[in-house]
Amino acid sequence: MSTVKFLTIEERLNVNAWDTDIYRPHIKIKDQEICRKCEKKPCTYMCPAKCYVQQGEIVVLSTEACLECGTCRVVCPYDNIDWNYPRSGFGVWYRFS
Ligand code: SF4
Ligand code: SF4
Image 1 (cartoon, rainbow, N blue to C red):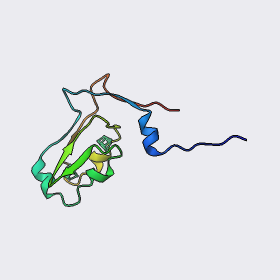
Image 2 (cartoon, rainbow, N blue to C red):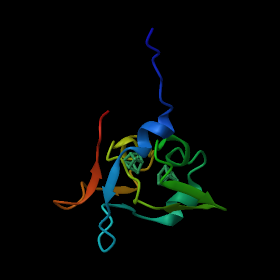
Image 3 (tube, helix red, strand yellow):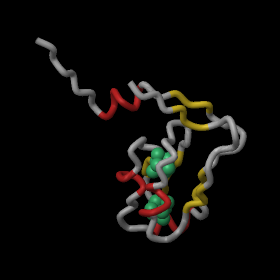
């Protein structure tokens, strides 16, 4: 009898690989002053890769583990995210298993 092992989201994400463009992040926060006034800061809990971390009133963005899903751009209520795909050859490499 075969058994099926279901992977957690973290296990699924861990099989991916990234070529990070450290010199040109593909996503930027436009204005931290707007983040200070953003009451719910949805980027900090809607990003599946936890790229946005609240530190006091501001938000710190690290794009190294970005999945290029576009969620942050959609949920930001102030259009405060400058979102682009990574340059050719950089970004996430999905590995399906
Ligand atoms: S949702 Fe937009 S405005 Fe609000 S904290 Fe995040 S980046 Fe800043
Ligand atoms: S594109 Fe997706 S994974 Fe990347 S920072 Fe935005 S919400 Fe997070």
